Image 1 (cartoon, rainbow, N blue to C red):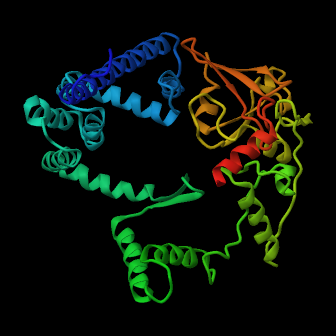
Image 2: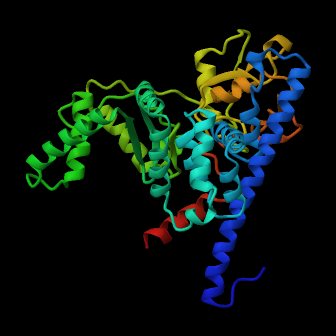
Image 3: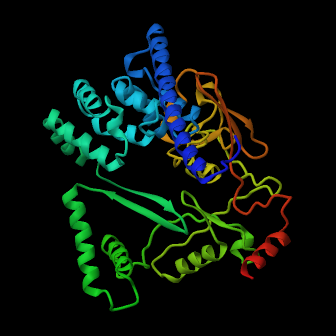
Length: 417
């Protein structure tokens, strides 16, 4: 439909469209639940061992919804929960609940008994009018309150188990930054933050750094044991074209797993590495074809991928090769199984996350190399017949024939101007 004519109409349409999104989410949950039931019935009929039933289903749902297997598992869990929470499902269908608020209710009741979950569903969602105007935090707090009243032992047990999931993760952030996140028990998390803040408060004003900058620098210094946050010896893979390395062009470089960086910054990183006497700097040459940017293949007769070949595949694929996934590569495997005559070569190799590499071993999954002479292209087929094509990204330094170096320079000059 055309855009609204008045401000009031535009605001009303925003509400209606949000309700349509909620209804679509409910419909997707129904279809995911139906797929779950059909797959389970089929595997029971085929006498698939109980331990192997349902394998790969979350990855398949993720592909169908153009998302990662982790998201697929969340969608499947959400669909299963909706069968036990009919009032929440009804509120979602009618647009009273958004997808995220329904997800909060599923998350905060997932560890309870079916009876307790059903009771919270009745208390909070049987009257749709009681949900109107409630925020995410209100719904979360109310669900937690009911959970503790109904099953306090489960709440305490959940908190105890949560400590087993403490971990540290890292993911890229915009502007060549990184988010390093620590999931800690509350007392430890509060203590870490308080110690950093106390130190920052004692030295703020002594230099040009802000309190936040001091806390960040202190975190790096205390964890690495370095006297300064900048002097941290770590192994960093840096992919850069020869022209950019020699300063003949400003083509972007790349840090695998984190993304592209400016050529000037890549050269500075190399200079910084050479300046530190205790830092080892090595150079590994990877050759690409100029016409399509494909990395040159290497062959091996071994079943396991040699270290250098596995490294080449990681650099070539960058992320899990399954469509929409985007997870880090955990395993290098044969597209065509070694047992079926598949070669241990770059042409027959794919980098996959652990979930997809397990799913591809299930019946109905296939990874087929469509093109290996040019950019490595694969076709992934799921048990339901869905077909998804993925092509390895062009190597760093490749410039399409339609874009000349003069044009790149011209745009750079315009940006500077």
